[in-house]
Length: 490
Image 1: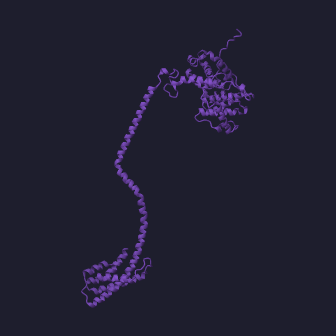
Image 2 (image 1 turned 30 degrees about the vertical axis):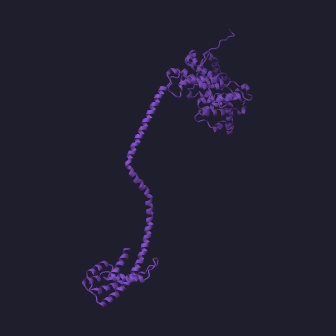
């Protein structure tokens, strides 16, 4: 663009030769005479442009020679045609002398010819310049569009920064307000906690209203020390309602040995799955209550047992046994559908009444009142679980079996006279003599291991209490009771 503008300026100044008005009018006439070419036409050849420029320079030089013969004019003729600014300045400093009429006509004719040639060259240069300008403008528009798009896209972020900068002055005030609010909330929580603790202290049951056996657990909300006595009174009432009794005389296809085999297998499964102790006692309770009301075929006895275990796990365990595990431990003797169907049958028959007192419910309470040691605790548990296998033990209530097991467990350490303390006698409302009948039957069960028809000993309970976890109490010497006086001999 600079090169084309220089050409235009040089051609104009050289063609004018000092008379700008004549050259401009001649250029206008030539422009109106010559038709303007299209922008998209073919560019002129380089040879044509150079020839036209040469003619223009020659005519300009002739006009300069005719204009004057001063040294400044002669120096101007020797310079290049491209240095048009210097030539114009020299011509302005040294104006030519007043020409004659003949000389004026010659000058006008030469000026018109040179201006026509310059106009042709200028028109060619203007077309080329316009094409270059159009090409450059197109390129600039193409490069300007993505810049504008990126600027528009970044406008929101700039706006956000500006707004954030405007809000920066209030940021410190907002942080201070948030900190004050957090401090106030913390203070209110601390005050609420203090008030709650004060209310709890005021609401605590006085020691006189808590049983002497529960004073230690007075501040333990899980122990429910203020309700312990009332709870066990209620358990004694429910014991008479839900305790199963002997029922084998009503069964047609099963007997006591089959039941003993089933309970022995339940003990093994209970130990393998590492279930809680109350789960075992509730399982046996569900089996006996269901068999009291329903005749069970021997092929379905194991199904009843594993389903009772599943129900007890759902009631007692945090993570109960799954149905597929129950199917697996029966060696796929029953399907999943059979287990679920039996579960519905048992629950309907029992009317969903599963919150019942078992032997374990009373055993825990009696051991706490007696302040039993760990060995005495494991002994009593061993004696009581051994009785689960015996159908004859159903002739006694769960509380009586638990009391007899605690009594026998304390004999090796305290003797017979001190094995049943007054606190237990008062709580159970049962003297020591009232326990001897049940205790003697329990010792009989411990001495005689159950044997199947194939002479296989059922020793699952004994193996369980031979472990270190239970201090191997199964090998301890069994307690002995004095013989009953023979009334017939007297």
